[in-house]
Length: 198
Ligand SMILES: Cc1cc2nc3c(=O)[nH]c(=O)nc-3n(C[C@H](O)[C@H](O)[C@H](O)COP(=O)(O)O)c2cc1C
Image (tube, rainbow, N blue to C red; front, side, top):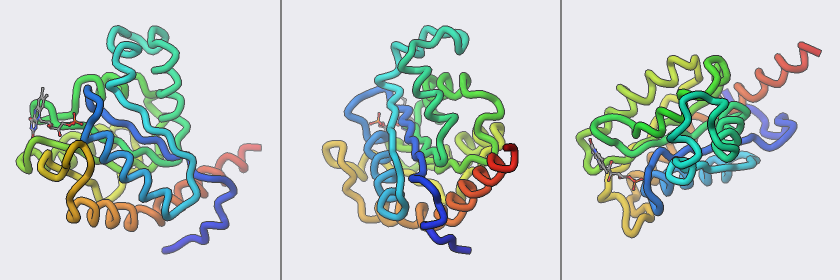
């Protein structure tokens, strides 16, 4: 199923989240590559938030009303997005603690039906199943629309924090291509539901 892009009344709000604790970061590079690919295919407004930057605004908060303004803004962007690109480096076989801490503050029903493209980076290939065993269950909890193809890259796929792998680039293209009809459909459904409440 394809949708005429002209039927989208405004650019889609695409929000990337990088769970890396460092900058520069391979994960942030991967997020930006995916968001840029979406932007080549659809009219978008993009924001990329990095946990590495938000950390001090986030780490000490035990409740949402304690997070600093920049972290609150990141949470509101996540909740208001038309598409999330959610990525983390693998830390001890899972996403980073601060990535989870950020999503612990997201409203329980704020992501229902929202398309989420999951991605991860790791030191090697062995933990590529973080996509299936860690990230998909998290967004399953939120009742999000986790998109069919995720993207995983290893440290050897990067050179100086730039993506240097034709295979990973092809995977990004495939992930976005498979996702486009679902992203557009979700945006239209969301808007028609909104209009019907007027
Ligand atoms: C504390 C820590 C734990 C890590 N644990 C794993 C792991 O379990 N599996 C793995 O493949 N890589 C692991 N790594 C490697 C990182 O996932 C990998 O270098 C990643 O590309 C870093 O992404 P970044 O540049 O965005 O921070 C770990 C790195 C750190 C610092």
